[in-house]
Image (cartoon, rainbow, N blue to C red; front, top):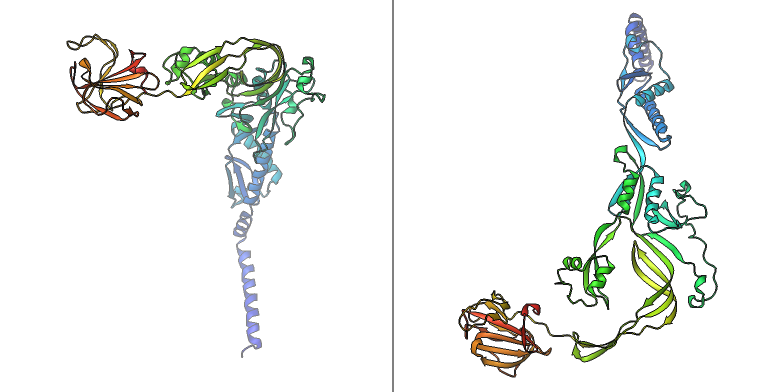
Length: 535
């Protein structure tokens, strides 16, 4: 009968029978019950092979190890310098299955196991990393012991230019970085401040100290002030290179001795630079400015043939400037009594070439008293501004009349060819030839195109005795070019030609030992070495 009383009775009897069977089984097997029941609730714990106690679960063992590690790290970081110790930590938690394994019924407290683990960690230190400071200046990096050494390093770089100790370095949080990276700046010292004041190592982020007291405003211009009213000397400094400082945990062997770091940072190293020529510059003036000899300056620049080479404003010349790893920019204000030169006055002449000039008035020096504000990069003055000037006597300027027309340039009259005879003395190559060669020969096959070396007017085109077929061209700067031993002439006398225009074909006419082109340049009717004029 579905849903009747009999099914409920059957279920109740089956439940009672099952409970009775369990009691009978437990009564007959007491040892097996105790071992399995208790073993599941105990673990033996070892750390690095050392027994540290018995706990109720693996989770408790991991909790104790975390606490031990936290205490271990705290001990190191609370030392005077702060450090990180590297210690082995191999944790093993084993289920205990019998009384012998358990070593008794007691479970150790978590506090006792944590203390035991801490002692094991102390005994297994295999490396110690101390807190140091890594300093990056451009591409240069150095590791120093502490922040005080960083300050001493930076102050040494400052003191090279600050004889009176007016300025000091300080570390601040870099406002342009999201992480805790420090940078350095220079500020004016307060009265009685120690050279390496510890409190200045970590100023609050964003805090900017005033750069000393500002001079009282007088309401007068510098020209109205007396010389004695100016605050002379060094008045501003800053580091010219980007400096980054970070805390780092490193082994002691990676540290650099402070004196070694100072030597590396402050010692001058040779740094190639490019100098732009200014009006009035000469090679000797530039060499003296950068502490070079003329020979050294010429050797550095492939564009300079010798010490007499011509330079023009806006030309670029390579110079070698000694600079330290950490550059310092600073400003000074000085009182000077000095001779001075007036600026050269140039009168342009539109009918002359630029390589012609005539001095109309010789200069003479003047004398003056000045207050000068100068900007220096390391030991080199890079800018100067005269804020007050009293002239004792005026300088007389040099007056020069100078041409404005760019003189013509000269190019090789053929493409290719082999130079077979240079300019100057030589052995007579054939009967009738001169022992002093007044031009340059390039060996080239008959029929090679010959072009005008520069623009001008053809003054002769025909036979020229020893020259064979020859062409003369007169140029606007007064020079004359001559092309000899031609096989065919393509221009006529009186014709204007442009630079690079085809004027003839090379040949082997006149007094000649083989197919070639003979080329001359004449200045005031006298042959000169063409190689000095060809571009």
